[in-house]
Every structure is written in C-alpha cells, then in structure tokens.
Image 1 (spheres, rainbow, N blue to C red):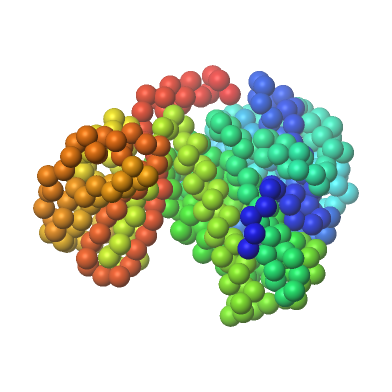
Image 2: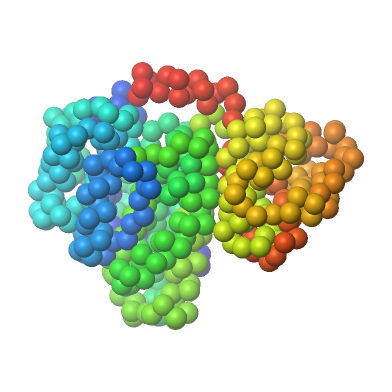
Amino acid sequence: MRIIDGGITAAKGFFATGAHIGIKKIKKDLSLLYSEKSAVVAGMFTQNIVKAAPVVRNEKIVKSGKKVKGLVTISGNANACTGKQGILDNQKMADIYAEMLQVNSDEVLTAATGIIGKEMPMDIIENGIRKISPQLKEDRQSAKDAAGGIITTDTFLKEVAVELELGGKTVTIGAMAKGSGMIHPNMATVLAFLATDAVISQELLQKALHDAVEITYNMISVDGAVSTNDMVLFFANGAAENEPFTEDSEDYKKLKDAVLYINQKLAIQVIHDGEGASKLIVAAVTGAKTKQDARKLAKAVINDNLVKTAMYGEDANWGRILAAMGGSGGFFEPETVEIAFQNEKGYLLLMENGQPIRFDESKALEILAERDIIIHISLHNGTDEAIAWGCDLGHEYIRINGEYRLRT
C-alpha cells in the first residue's frame, strides 16, 4: 500500500465538485460525486432511531444491492425531523441530480448535514445542483471542492488516498469525510465517503467497511452526542479491472488493511478537529478479558466529561480515569490495573497493581501540555485490547454549540 496525494477522485472513473450555492452564508454547501461506471456500494449508518431522510433512503438502496452512479450532499441543513416534506425534498434532490447525470433517480444516493428540523430550501438546492453539475471533474482541486462542500463546523478538509496492487493491477482508494461536533461512538457522527476502482463484490465491500467502522468511527468521541445523519458510504466501480477475489484471498486482506487505514486516518482527523478541542486523547487498553470489555473500557475513558476536562486543564487526575472505567460495564479487577501517560515528552506511570504511584507533577504537566496524549491502561485480566480516540472539553466547545443555529 502506498499513500498518495488525493481525495475522492483519486480512483479511476470518479468525478466530483463542490461549491457555495446559498444554503449557508459563506462556506461551500453542496458536494457532488459521480462514477462513470455503475458502482456497487456499501454503507454503515447511524444507530440513532431518529434518522434523517437521506439515511432512511440510502439504507434501502444499499440493502437492495442496486448499483449506483452518483451522490449529492448538502451542508447547512440536516433534513432530519422534517416529516413527509423532508422525505419528498430528499427524493427531489436525488431526482434533480439524476436528471443532470441522465440516470435513474435510484442510482443516486443523498446525504445531508447541518441544522435539525429546518425546512429544506429546495429552490436554492435545485438551482445549485443544475448550475454545479456541469463542473464535475477528475482533478485534485475538484476533490478538494467536494470535500469542502460536506463540512459544517470543521476547520480543515479531511481527505486520504492510497494505491495498492491487487491481481497485478494498480487499485486506488480515495476518501473524504466531515466531522467536528456531535461525535459519539455509535457509528460515530460523521459523513465519510470512499471510492475505489477495484473489482469487488458488494458482500466483500460491505464486510471490509463494517469491520473497519467497528474499530475506527465506532471508537471515537468528541461530546457523547449521537447524530441523526451520520453515514459511511463506499463505492467500487471496477475500473481498475483487477481479477475478482474471495474473502480468504491475499488480495482481500490487502484491501481490508487499506480500508482500515483510510477510515482510521479519517476518524483521527475528526477527533483532531473536535469542536473547541486542544488535545487528542488516546485510550489504549490491554490485557482485557474480552474484546468487548476492552472496547467498553476504552470508550468510557475518552467519553467521560471529567476525564476530558482534566485533560483540558492539564491535570493528572488519574482517579477520574479509573472511575470512568468502573462505570463502563466492562469487566476488570481494580487491584491489577496500571495507568500511565505517554507522548513525545516521555512515559509516566501513575498507578501500578491497583495502587497509586508517587509521581513527578512537573513531568506530568510537561506531558499533558502536549497536543497528543496516550493513556495506557493495562488490566492483566486477559489478552484482548482496544484503542479509542477522543479529545478534551473546554470553553470553546460551549461557545461554538451555543451559537450554532444562529451562525450556520
């Protein structure tokens, strides 16, 4: 696998664009993706029972196994909790883009992000799709424009692309994502789109995506809020013309590793861009009795507000970490736990065999003053492990979300 400079148009046969059409005040608010060849598609969707109209429609199309040709995304309006009119508006959005692509409307997927419960400005959206569709291109700038069209409070574009060899052919995967606030481990709260020119069955594409999501987006948290709109879609159009492969093949393993890398990279970028965040917190749990226990414990640490505020205040209050673990529902024996902080400034043991360690407060402050902080948690109860990613919680998060509806 080779990391390359690219985004959603990196793979053969994918075109994209993005622009400001007037849903938001200034930033880009429309993103378009088009596959020259019909693509199989896999998807993972929010577990919130309150689902936005695009989520409901996309789930049905993905489950049907139908191939698709396009994706239209708007930013600034979630089209969630908008009733029957929202469903009709979402369908109209697909119809308009399908007309521009000269395909059937069920070959077009939709996505939205922004304010919940806000009526869709369909005149603006229709005019925007008709105006921007002719600008679809394969170049690098078009990928960046498309990535810009899906963001809300994000402060930077989230893109990644890789190349790998499958069956003697060069296969490329390009991706883009958005996410900054309303992020919680429950399929996370992101929009993420991947596109590959690999020949692959929908079944294997879905499996690779599902397995990656479980240990990437499902292991991040900014604020504990589960969105109505989050989804990850993975398109494969077969333009690379590699030989088909099976689940037990080396080619599938290589593709699966690449999909995991891409989604982990995007998930960590989301946490780095957490609303108001100044630190990335990594909870690395080892020695758990089961994988489920490890994941529960890791997620509990990065999602605990007392841990998050301690990291913001650069306070080595390890007791909050242990308390968060104790309320997680994951099994561990407190008397065998070890807790330590680590980053480029060093490694500091805080607790060993369930007992506090007398540590150097100045060294702790030096470590906690850094942008990235790893919290090592060794349980000595088994062999399973898990990693979760989160961020600190400070004043800026409150300011951003207190003003969100008025600023968007």
